[in-house]
Amino acid sequence: MGFFQFGKRIKHRQFDYHPRFYDPDKEELENRVKKYDRSATEFEISKERIRGGLRRKYRVNNEYSKSIRNKSNKILLFTIAILLLITFFFISEYLPRIIASFEQ
Image (cartoon, rainbow, N blue to C red):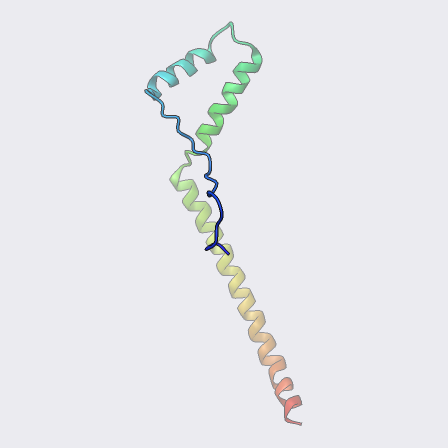
């Protein structure tokens, strides 16, 4: 029924904010100064520490991620091998019985 529309189609809202200037070096400097500022409350300091930790979390060491990926692949390969062995056992053990029961 999408061919027959009466009235105007509703448009989604759009985000149209365009920042004029962004200086990441200046923001990093301000954050470092804010971290050592004595006038800041303990709550603000801990909030900045958590925010900085979350930013650093996504900069993962490539060797570490590669070792984790290799470990995951080895576990997956081991699981597939065990499942294939179990399947082979059941087929070799029970398939002749199943075929014999259908022949009667």
